[in-house]
Image (cartoon, rainbow over all chains, first blue to last red):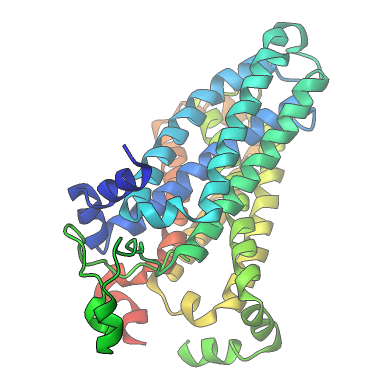
Length: 206
Length: 173
């Protein structure tokens, strides 16, 4: 399926329409998204600071990570769900927004960084569990993780400033009727609202 | 409050932030959310320890010494970035019910956090042996963490104060 068709069908779904037309859904989705992202970042930071040897140096790394990572994943699931619901309300605008694209790339980078950790220092945690810090590559991935998650927060916040009030633009009609230019009434050629577009509740997002 | 907010918006730091709002506000808001992440992570670790669900290899005192300063530091970052956000958009921040409800929750949370820190510092063993076993103490820990949830949600709702309907002063302004 063509990507733009998929985006448009997401936007025109009944779920997206109800989210858009409600005064309450979007604000609460965004608030829960921020809370979940805060939990993701806060718990990852505790684990990363331990791996870096900046805090909790005398505690077991395995214990700290096994206690916290289920919470991190739970919060990430909530964050992904609320983020996806916000995305479908204005899918074409978000998909073409540079900050949104950067945020998605950063999330991919966070995933790759986690994979690198698990394939390297993560394989030998039993050896350095009680050491003050992780071995070299473990410290590098921990530092990258902290930086990437802070960048995710920044990119995410900028989305709200670059999409507020933006509406998805209809693609221009494939054929041009030259009579419209000659008649001098350009307003007549404006595309009619597409089927499935619903009235949008006022959205600030800033 | 209306006239104070309007006056504040004419002061030099406010005008400076308004002039550079395209980059200043997103940066300060992002710093604010980063502070929230650090604060909520630290608050979660303290709550989980009080409930006995995590960090039980540490005493309550050790847990307080590990996460207390981070929570205090995060609160300082939140205060500084929050003040800048008020300066940048005084009317938008101060003339909303969400902001004042948030401030009420923040004040309650700071009082609880400081009282907890002072009490654990002085009576660590009493906490370990008696207080942690009380259901009321465990319930208070859960409610305090829920208060963090309320603070975050209300903070984001400042941008959407219309949801309070006629209760919102923003709708009358």
